[in-house]
Every structure is written in structure tokens, then in C-alpha cells.
Length: 360
Image (cartoon, rainbow, N blue to C red; front, side, top):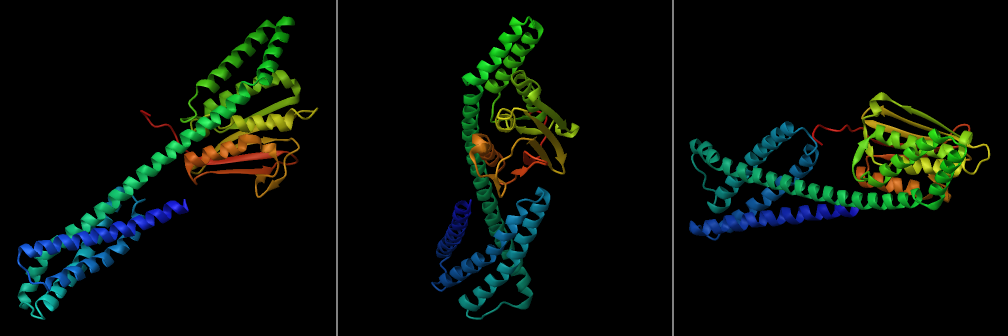
């Protein structure tokens, strides 16, 4: 990010300087058509340099105005362009009469006429500079968003491949199919049929859900329930699950399959390795403009250092999840690991609260 900011900073100074040099060249070539004396070159160079100086502060104001409401931003740009144009016009007239006309000044009654004739030209030049600044900034922002989308696409596909490698491995399918076979042998056909349906629905969701798109949280919760119901066949009473999802959180958009690796880690390290099993608690709620997701367990936990696991207990899941969130939300997210009380691990995710818009 720092390299990108440095590059943008360098681009501004380069384009800013080249733009005013271009203004000076065009202005001077126009003076040749009017057969102005050579001394006018100094006036043109001085005018361009002052214009170069006066428009520098506009950059820093426009950086803030970029995030404002469009109407407020337009009014600000027009007011600043007018102010800078007036100051620049005063200087240009002063330099013209003092340098080119050697101190000869027009009669006092004609000053207003001169300013009224030259101020609009200065205003259009400053307004053009402002338009170019916002145009270039919009182009840079568009390119950056395209790059972020490309990165998110690559990360999500990578995450999907890693997840499918676990979901379709022989252990998961063998344990599930073996449990179904046992149910059939014990003539629990209704339960076996339900398990086949759950497995089919879960695999369909995992295989065909686009990991690039965001989906309502309730879909993710449904997929999590399917997965946990399948695992309950394996662990029986050793696996306990609780859900606490706020009503206003159900329709919030989240990256698809974002909870899956967290739940897998909880089962692998907090349930499967313990004779007594464990409990997994999944919760979600809206907090201000954010959506808070949490997956907690009462397992042995992991050593933490500044919220990050020291061991491999986090597996690929947490690292992969962090990469996906960074690609999708840039810096506007958090993924924090803390100790659960009285024992276990708690994984908290904060992302912007978004709802699906009509037509999307």
C-alpha cells in the first residue's frame, strides 16, 4: 500500500508540473500569433509558476472532498476555483503591467473591466485543473478496484480449492457414508435418507456456490447447520452446537463459505481430539455499521501471540480466511483470536454491514 501511495504521489507531481508547462507553452505560442514582444515570455513563465503554486493546496482539499456528498463536493470545487482564479488574475495583471508594460498601469476606472475580462479565463483554467484532478483520481480508483477484484477472485478460488480438498477427502466422505450404511443396516431408513439429503445439499452448496459473490448470512448458517448435522452422526453426543444469530444479521451479506474453515478447525481441534467432545457456539449480530461473527469452542485452545496462533492449530483455514477478507474489504475488517472462558478458542470477525440491493 505504501508503494502504491508513493507511486500516486510521484504521478501527481509529474502530471501537475507537465500540465503547467503545457499551459505555458500553449500560452506563449498564442502570444506569438499576436506578435507580442520577447519579454512576454517571462510573464508567461511567471504566470504558469504562480498557477503551479496556487493549485497545490487544492490537491489536499480535494483529497478530503473526494469522500463528501457530491453536491457538497461540487460547491466546494466551484468556490475554491473562483477564489484561486481571482488571486491568480490579480497576480497575472500585476505581472503584465509591471514586467511587460514597465510599470505603466491603466486608468483606475478600467481595472474592473480588465479583471472582468481575464477572471473568467483564469476560472476555466483552474476548473479544468480540478476536473483533470478528479478525472485522474477516479481512473486510479477504478483501476485499484479492478485490481482488488482480481485479487479477491484469485484468493477466493484458492480458498475454494483448499476447502474442497478437505470436504471431498476420503475421511469426510468415508465417515459420512459409513454412518449412513450403519443406519441402513440398523433399519433406520428415515434417518439414513435424511443424512443422504443433507450430504447432497451440503456438497451442492460447497461445489456450486460462487465464492466470489457475497450471500445472505442465513444461507451460510444453513450450510453450517447441514455440515454440523452430518458431523453429529460421527461424533453423536460428543458434538454440541449452539447458534445465536440476530434477526437484523440474517440478511447481511457475507463472503460465501466464510464460516466453513472456522467450523472445521473447531471440530478438528476442539472435538475430534477429545474423548469428551466439545461445544461449538456460532453467533452473529449487527453492531453499528458492522457485522460481528463469532465461532467459539471449549477445546484446549491454542497459544496466542498478539491475537495470532503460534502453532499450526489454526491450519490453513484462518490464514486463508484472513487473506480473503483482506482482498474483499481492504483494511475495513478484523479477524481476532482470543481465549474463550473458561477454556477454548474464540474467533471474531468484523466486516461492514451490507444488505443486498434491489436488482443486484
